[in-house]
Length: 157
Length: 190
Image 1 (cartoon, rainbow over the protein chains, first blue to last red):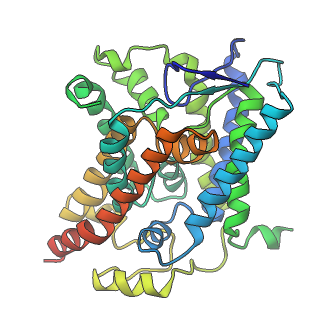
Image 2 (image 1 turned 60 degrees about the vertical axis):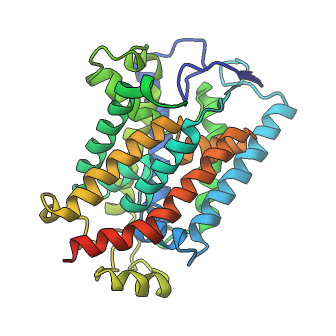
């Protein structure tokens, strides 16, 4: 396992070998399972997010806490046993560089999270669950991302 | 088996599944887990407008778009194929707090008195869809990630900037819930 200290984006594809278009079905399947979990454990619920920010239920803290611990143990095992990707490449973890954006942007996202009851993942699952008006939220989120790209140079980082 | 699947799943089950997404994506294709980057790829693919931030080879990151399409499809399957049979059980204290704001539907995953098309061109829609969505899209990109990229992938790989991000996600959420939402509900209930 090694680190990519200058990743091109935030959730980068670190595979060196090129994958064919259809090969991406793998990620569709993992995403589908992920979306099912989101609905079944009610993570996409606006109420669960309200409970979390009101500290009135342990549910979301349990979900995120367990996920972090499981992810941490998995990465430890990958490192210790020197586990490779299926096609034999060394596993690469992208570095998360520090910037003031983590503070300002993080706070802004938190504000939006509590209003919409959704981080980007649940937005997709909410739409799939038939809350079609969330398409508007989603389009507005895309516009937000686009606006960030437009004024990035003028923001403190 | 199907009986079991049709119940709402315990937080620990969900946590294990979500946590395992990290090594699964790495092992099947050296992909770093993160979802908000999909929004950037969509901008880069559809509306790049000559902005440098959107000029990169998004095709190399197309796995991310397959993944989020899967999340959407999974949401569909989870709701229309394997739906939880009972209504959602919201904490009584949360119900009491939200009733004060005029929220009255606690049966579904989302309060339908907010999240429906009739509210689209009202003050409710402006806050809950337009402004809320904008903050999510702008904030996650400014922070370089969201709950998945920072709070799960970043914390799991022991990167302290992700801890900073997670702390500010939570602070923003607390601020909106306890200071912002009372003002917003006050405005829209006038």
